[in-house]
Image (cartoon, rainbow, N blue to C red; front, side, top):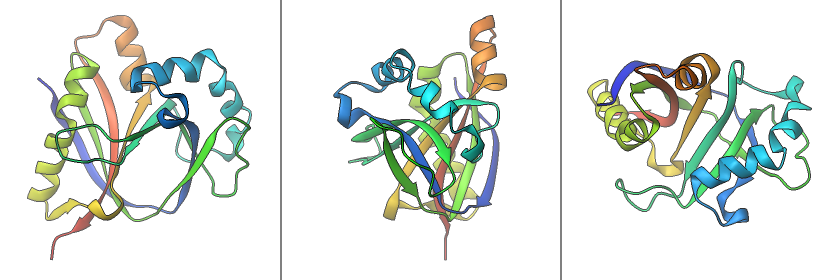
Length: 174
């Protein structure tokens, strides 16, 4: 069973998400990661590493938005990385400004990725409500950060638990 390991709140500045979108490629979220690696988009983003924002120790992120309900996945999924606003967007890629504001940053651990993804929203939203916040549904998104130390290395070594980092916008209740 997935468990919430860490939760903190942070006020952020605008960032530019650069990546590839499921809408452009007509593939599932898992298949989009394959396109990202196989077509060298990771290398294009690495060329701009000096402009990256908050991506230390992270191989990439999955950004999801356009949720029609609490039960489903979003209509748009983008695989990429965060950059400083104004960074040039490489050919064949998309860019999206992620508005600054209050976000919740969480770490969720479980035996496998599907267990984490299947339980993340409920675990995080329940805890933020207990802390006097609520998900900010005006421009809602969630971001999965795939860190080398907490996710990739444990996955490759067959560890009992992998940890995925999350972010989503929240606002104070009241």
